[in-house]
Picture 1 (cartoon, one colour):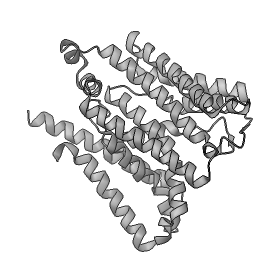
Picture 2 (picture 1 turned 135 degrees about the vertical axis):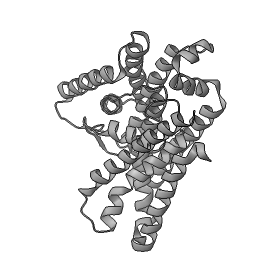
Picture 3 (picture 1 turned 180 degrees about the vertical axis):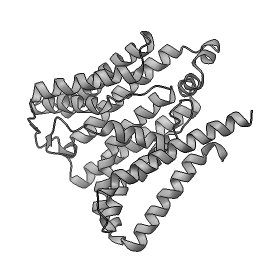
Picture 4 (picture 1 turned 90 degrees about the horizontal axis):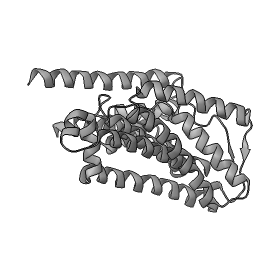
Length: 311
């Protein structure tokens, strides 16, 4: 239980928030608005899974929002040109994988700091989007929205895809060598190397995987709107990193669960709707989210200090 103390704490906070909403704002749980809010968070969940894997290897990627925007515009352009939905999704996945691989190569094989690399690529992709689209939105064909299904069926499909991905990734992190290699690399890359693990390959693979997941997240966002905005990824990097850190992924690497990422995202995502239903000023959202993140990071610091004292 101690190993999952952060996840349990975040889960308890989420339950308390939901209980308060049940008591004081029961209309928050009306079926269609609730499902719509849940579906709207699924792209961020998929992106947060990728970010969490990168952080677990003791790296960081702040270019995910710009990557998301690039993938969305590329997929939207393909769909608007008359290509099938499958081709548009493949374009998003491919573009994300290429951008993730570029980051991974620079970090893993050239040894450059991930914060510097991803800051540079973030600015690069943002400028490419700005020059390419010049702020223009991309109108999508009718068959793209909700995969050509009804809104209810499309929302169910989006939620199901994200849930299956989360469950599969969480299982893999616990039961497959690939997941154990990620934890080992993040805990101590040199010790992992001596144990026969290739930390460079693991780091490269997590960045590549994160890029592909960003492409999938962009595709899940694509089907929820009749048009695509070039800046649709703005702020996603902060949201994804915050969900991972609040959910128990140690910023120093080597620790965390993907179920915790889900809890962290749901807790942070429900702050704004809760404020609305409690008739509180919405500008408190960022302050509350910042406080939650600060408490999470502080808890990590205390845990590391206590661990050193007990050695």
